[in-house]
Length: 239
Image 1 (tube, rainbow, N blue to C red):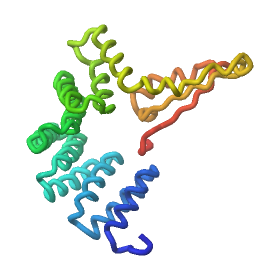
Image 2 (cartoon, rainbow, N blue to C red):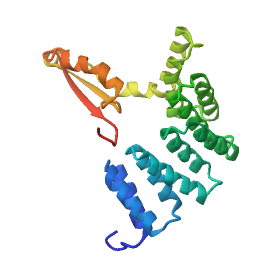
Image 3 (cartoon, one colour):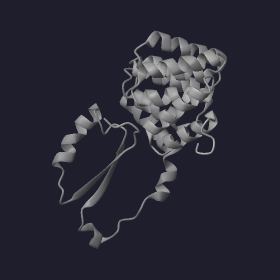
């Protein structure tokens, strides 16, 4: 940027770098500069919409993704990003229409079915979400996020019994978690057992969220002489 301050690509690269570094505000500012310099910069519009959505600037996100759709109406990705922004804005019907357009453009793309499943989950259409995730998994059996979201939403399915739910979680474990056993550490021995056991919690919901409300009493009342809790928040936005 210092060498080419009037080059949209330079600001775009800076923005994506700031995103990777966890600087959401800096990333948004850089991408805004990129589209200011080059209004029809498709990738910048698309990623700016994503970042604005993460930051909670919903209407601005909708405007940016709509611009991207106008630039490339043949892009299934643009329709998916626009659908995500519309969904967050509460325009569920319009969001579903965008996903349908994406499916018409790329009917075999697992990521489109994943987006559909996410949208339906957000609006509590559980059985349809399950069907969409299954369509994604059929097309990409080893994609972690599709199967993760699938087993999550199964918890809310009226048609899923406990045995079936357990079977699906066992299948998820076999596909995605088996390799993690090699990282497991043996017990450090009797001497180390005298110190508090360190327990780590990783979540995007350690914020103003129901998960945080439910787990807060555990954090408050655990036996600090026996356990040492460490929390890791993996979201870009703080509240």
